[in-house]
Amino acid sequence: MIRLIDTPEFQRLRRIKQLGLGLYTYQGAEHSRFTHSLGALHLMTRILDQLSDRYQISDRDHAAARAAALLHDVGHGPFSHAMENVLGVHHEQLTMQAVLSAETELGQTLSSYSRELPGRVSSIIEGTFKPAALAQLVSSQLDVDRMDYLLRDSLMTGAKYGLYDLEWIINALQIDEDGIGFI
Image 1 (spheres, rainbow, N blue to C red):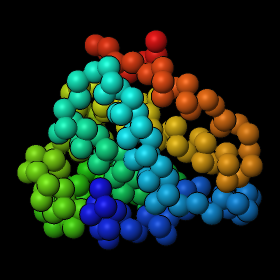
Image 2 (image 1 turned 135 degrees about the horizontal axis):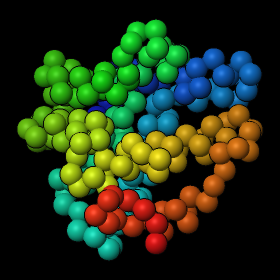
Image 3 (image 1 turned 90 degrees about the vertical axis):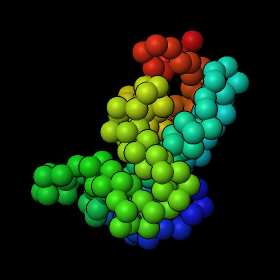
Image 4 (image 1 turned 45 degrees about the horizontal axis):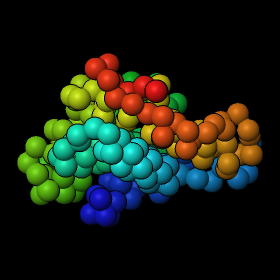
């Protein structure tokens, strides 16, 4: 994961504000996509550790899910989702291009770990990965992206709308044939 964090494609997230121009309304909202992505990796690691006590998750799946959580926002540009409307392309598509490309340091780093890792990471981000639960942990109504940004944005802005019981969610998560859910 350190080698992925050190790539130029990931490091550029330091310069992209999580809330775009929101920092002009909420002065504390100086946080970046970089810190958010590290938070998503942290949450994915905690959730996988918790689920591994009850379910078989292969080392390959574990590595791919952690990498996908870390890299899920690599395709974001300045002004985030607002620019997607202008450019007509979603950040997930740009992320998958960077992950799958042999020309990016990010793609090369993933490939150096395993030839199939870029494709596995891309399919998790795209939502087509099996088991579906791992893709859902990266992108769904109950994913590490949302879990991190709700708490992080609430803390940094002072708004209380995003508060929830993270520990309860992590401990209550279950996997079934449909994916992730609660006890």
